[in-house]
Length: 232
Image (cartoon, rainbow, N blue to C red):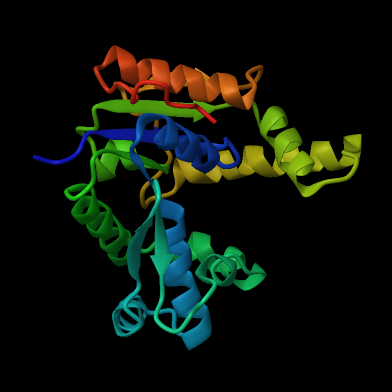
């Protein structure tokens, strides 16, 4: 019997990963960041200069790309790379990860890794764009995390530091709105709201509030956090 799963899906810059990590800590579950696996495959593609899915997967096998547990987070590991998180978040990887994530054989590989690992965990919180619809359609709790493009744009710019001017905000808002349109309309793994998901609009919510609400949703389904668990 597999571990209970909370699937958190949503559009770009909706705070899925940070929220999922905080929810996992509160519940004593393990956070699985599906995007980091796609970034690892993209790193293989960029460093080996290959763009054929078969060659990318061969490279991933040779480098033993996989997952290791650190606290409540499954970290990606790659043979010979000390700081994997830094390596998979370079500009080159970021520029190419969308194309890599659209390749069906690579999506199948990532989905298989996720399904394998949740069998060995006490519980999992997984974030992505098709977790509740494709990867774990029988998840005990599905949350669709969203916010207006303007709210997401403001948060993304604030994370980069400095003053957010109106022109920057307008440009970033337009970029995210277009990204939403593309993600919803793409042929492979389009962004979809699971029919049985709880929709959580965080446009006017603070981070602690949105985490607390998901923890409450979990409690309603019997996915109780340990006594005295701290949400943040």
